[in-house]
Image 1 (cartoon, helix red, strand yellow):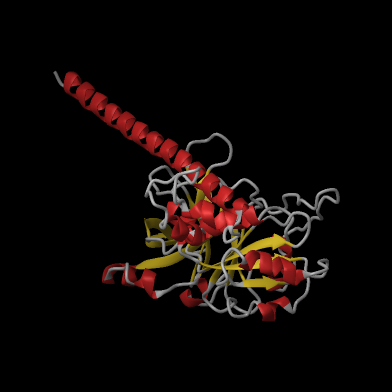
Image 2 (tube, one colour):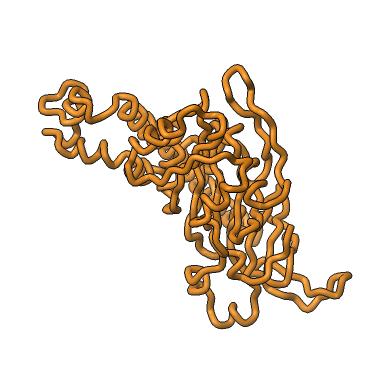
Length: 356
């Protein structure tokens, strides 16, 4: 990996600068997490790359996070000062989801992303429902979004796919590319610039690793083909890492995520389906369920073709999913808090009895 030259090349912005005290600016090093492992983080500073050991006292961190390191006088074998975790800086943006499977916790995906590339291939695996799901995730994070339709060299009519995506929202930026073609770098140049951090999101097999390799200008990520019978992909990337692109900026490749369970994403869903909520506001009843109530604007829009039934069904599905997951996580947090309070009280009472 190419060494970073400056904090700006790492994605440092005024948002992070304003969080530092004068003492921290003079005596601490700003570092960005570029790789995440089970018990360690790989971080980058102006002076190079370092490995930071994790412990239970540290906050949860993910790739893209900015943190402060404190230099210690003790020297390592290479005569360099040791660096210890000081604190985590507030995130400008963050991506998270409900952990896969039945685990009741939120999983951080990445942090401090400026632009999200949502990849979807123009083949049998093209799926508007999945694009809307990723859009809700990105809108919740407040990052900018570009929908990238891959495999343009294999599609007979890319414009049809572009129009299908823009039917969701005419303001969505959509680019159709061939991830293997280096001309796509010029096509995506408005977002590939120094200090801009890009996250590549999408399900397996859509070309995320191929696009990443093209933008990096070298082979960094393994790539696999898709299953011929259904055009679905196989997982290639298995970990998250932040890398420098050939023409500047940083790119974060993420593992293929076919299961994106939304949680605490109500605002993101509202933004993604703003057209539906605008129509629903015209219903006679504020709590209209759109199931036969009089003067239902949603049902009227469906009957006259102004609203797609598929889109309405997906909107309702994502709202229910988000409400269910958010409620479960809130209950889990409340239980954990109550259990922690119980342990603290028990320890305090044990200490009093011991002193008698």
